[in-house]
Image 1 (cartoon, rainbow, N blue to C red):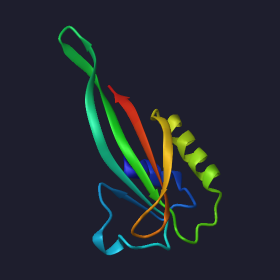
Image 2 (image 1 turned 60 degrees about the horizontal axis):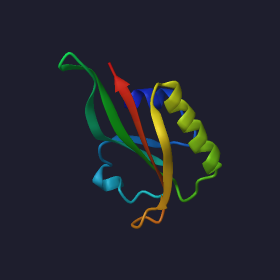
Image 3 (image 1 turned 45 degrees about the vertical axis):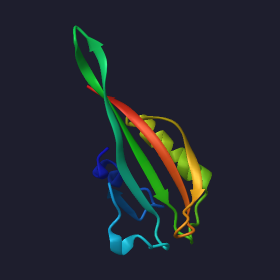
Image 4 (image 1 turned 90 degrees about the horizontal axis):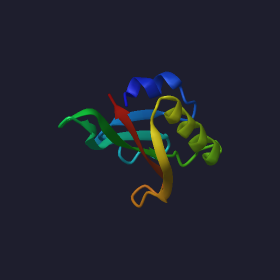
Length: 116
């Protein structure tokens, strides 16, 4: 997933998007809502005649919500999941947790897409 696709959506609740890692100097930033996108796995798919025709790419989307977050969490996640589906990504759901270091409410969404 490209960062510019998410950025172009202009989610009003999202302050920062990072790919693969959050800069060290910003790891403890708790007053901004940050999204981290990381590759999980890529599997060869749709085998025929001893070759594959596509790749099933899986990524993890983690969101660390600002401690001052003023939006409805459920609506934000629902809107984001709809955005992924509209862009041909699929998810089986998400998990909420409290980040043990920053004490921020966070969510992890695992999504995948068949790339031809």
